Length: 481
Image 1: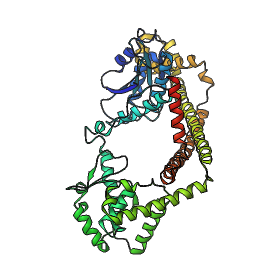
Image 2: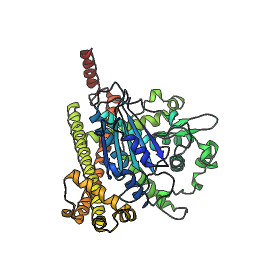
Image 3: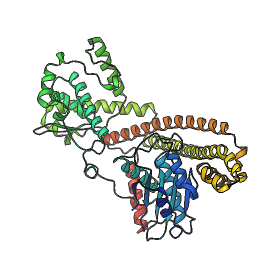
Image 4: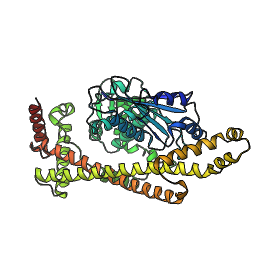
């Protein structure tokens, strides 16, 4: 199974780089690649970049490892290609890095050393306990796209061995829960109405000595009493009973500096606006027969029925607005949207690749032009050795630039930096626009999938063709056997 790890380098970059580019492990150095630096002087270049860093700390670089299963059909050259893609995705192409593929063991694996400070804005790389999960997700996505095996998806138990994996996330769950409860109280006549409102927002509810809630994507339940004395079950019931006296609670999102009561007219408009926003979203139909709360309360069951009817109306309106009336229409529309998303992703990858090449080219061009006079002065110096010692940093940067331009077969004197910067800005704007369109398309595809599931639940028709795809997959397996 493909795996990934990240380690911190706090002492010396040189030893780490010397280890990963070892010729005995990398086919005489043929399985080595560098970005933003030359392999020969990578350690010095990274150190010089790090000196310009805006952050503090002992972390001078990071060591990424990417291992592939011995059962995977992958060549060393392909492994190096995936290692470069992995490094680019993790660093965004703004950090100097060296990638090497080791073939000295029974499984092919990659080593990546990247600087702790980026060479574009000279900012430090932020790594916390959550970063390893982001890195693993990137690695899994790359491996799946290349038909390589990955480890089973990590579960909540594994992620929550340390409760405070990411304090900001923990706080955000609590803030969000407080906000949702406050909003539900204003629109509920009974405690059951409030529970229904939270369930419609996707919250799981666990009743016991202390009532608990869990939002979609949250790992663990949050006890209501832990977010404030006004959020225990008893306190919530009292607040619902006396909601006419309930003050309007403003969140940080409202961007109002002072908390205050809002007059009824403004409050009403705020609530109506909220409802308008949420009404465009299609929820999944609720299976009432499996809902414990519905079995315990007829009123709650009727509320779910009304909600399901509303959801079906939204689903049908969505399909009609997109002229989808048959399963064939659905497949054509879904295929077209997925193909469009694939094109966006391909264009984004191409733009990101060009941005990386440009940033590297800009760096080496700047270093060449800034330090060329030092290099030529060293040739005319009376004591070349003394001059080289005095101007070591400038000469390192100049020689690294020369290596880069020789490999690329380019003439640095002919390069116009202003043109490079202009092209970089154009590509950055294109990337921002494509990212926006891609995000919007992803939401539409997700809504399309929800609509298909709702139709299947309601009338038993698999308009998305999931059953047919499953049968094809099974027939394919039988043929393989």
